[in-house]
Amino acid sequence: MSLRFYWIALGLLLPIVWYCAYVDFRTHKIPNKVTYPALLIFGGFQFLLQPDKASIFTGMAVGFLFFFLPALFLGGKVIGVGDAKLGALMGVVLGWPGILMALIVSQASALLFVIPLLLSRRMTWKSKLPLGPFLALGYTLTLVWALFLARH
Image (cartoon, rainbow, N blue to C red; front, side, top):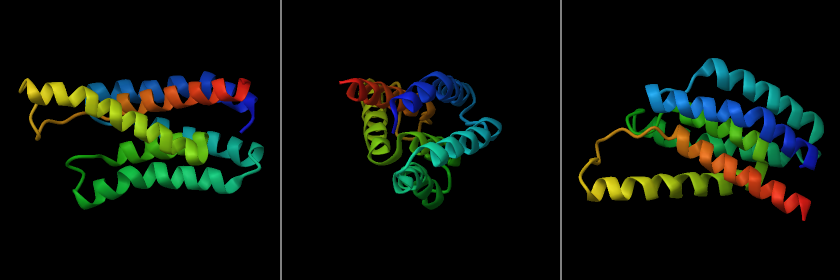
């Protein structure tokens, strides 16, 4: 991915991802009216600008399926389809293997957040936790890391 696209993704998509995280935190839903247009726009940009089309499609598929399969098999009780759509959006921008790093960072940060709450009994295994903020954190840190690597 070109350095220019990283800056575009940082400047334009970062506020969109954090808006989705905010809405998810408040309502436990990620808005389709934001994720669908962003997926089309940034997917289109990536398709036009990125020579490695396989990376785009693999990143999108991994980002989507990582959340969609648990949502499908668990009936949406633990993970929602909105998380899958946000994962697909992140995957389209980060590609493969960038989405893998973002997913690892997001899930590790969620785990670091949840463990103390479970141990202190302020949260139970049945408590709902919006994943949007953790996905936004994973996306942000991965994008900043990619910018750092691209410059050096």
